[in-house]
Image (cartoon, rainbow, N blue to C red; front, top):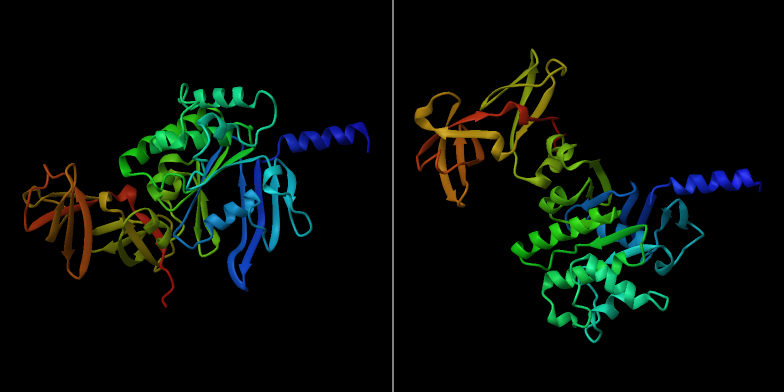
Length: 359
């Protein structure tokens, strides 16, 4: 091999994605868990694998990490094949950091030794101390895990994962064991550390709010396949189908046929652009996309209120127009208790989809 060829190969690897999964298949006793999944994670990108329990997201992460082996397909780290039909590089040689759901901290070891665990070199403890300072835990080196709060333990696990400078840090439901208020704080702290380090990460979660808040890219999984890969804003505004829309919030659904670029619905006319005349479409609005006003305001359509639930800064209203039940969200100061309200759709937020096949 010539020097030029070696140089070109090195350049190609230098520009390669930190993690690439190609056609990953996994089955247990002939039961398919992953069905030809492909995903590329770009440098400095935070990708959230989002989906319901049992969709295969944790299995995909375990295959990337080298904890499980795929039935078919290829895993590459920084352009190098680490798993395919003939090759399997063990987890400890893949240059990937891991943060498990249970954090996997050793209770009998001091914090600095937990972070330095598995790191070679005489300066391992010094580097671990520096890593702890990088996550805001300077001075905690001699503490034991049980002496730390849940959020502090999370940061210890993050420091340990980042210390070897991995190509990608893999997180498996890392915040699910924390209460809501602490979860929000720790999530933001983790995101700040990852961004400050220019780190690349893949985060498995079943929480759509978490994915929207943390991800540069969301890979939405369902029944062993990735059904959509998009930015948080794009996947919220333009979901690939109705089930994808419902992953992120309730949606109010209407159906109708296109007539002169418009679909008539129970809440008014919805422009749908250059759609085929007579095409049967599904029109969906998230609760906040239907503006709610007091009945005496006028305009819009009248809704009969069946239930009103107060949540402090918002009020949730379940109402009915004809045979259609709607879930709405409103400002309690704008919409006081009443038997009827008026609704005006924000047409910019209409989700327009082909009607899903029946059955």
